[in-house]
Length: 160
Image (cartoon, rainbow, N blue to C red; front, side):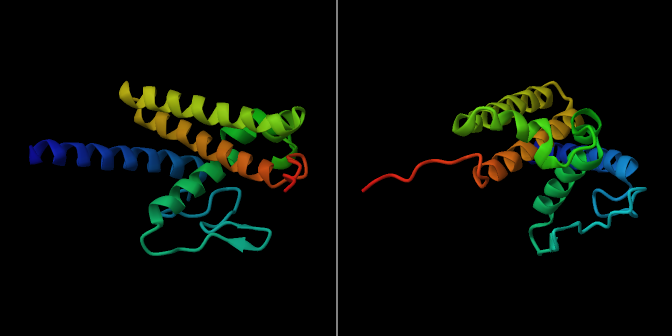
């Protein structure tokens, strides 16, 4: 049985390496192991003065968050949806605003849909595609988080 576990661990590491290689090829540094890509962004990205720090034991989370950011800012998200607009003015944020409070359900739906699609891809052996789809889940979760903190999501305070 331990041989099966070792085989699974090896497959996971191989998938990680394949995915990391594709990110490095596309961005030059998305996994933190390469050099900055043509967009010149360093591994620790800086937005509004905030830097995602290296914290021992949290490297896998940092890599996932970085990869999701890169996919949105420089990859598929930028290519298909940005239209030269900042994140807060892209369809991922604008469409939900049309529905006021109920717009959050749109983000929740996309998170669930993308997670289901990614799970099915993984079960079909399409690990790299599944991991890329899970980056979309992270981006939609971040969009939902931002939307909940915006003026567009305004829930009247409950009266006591």
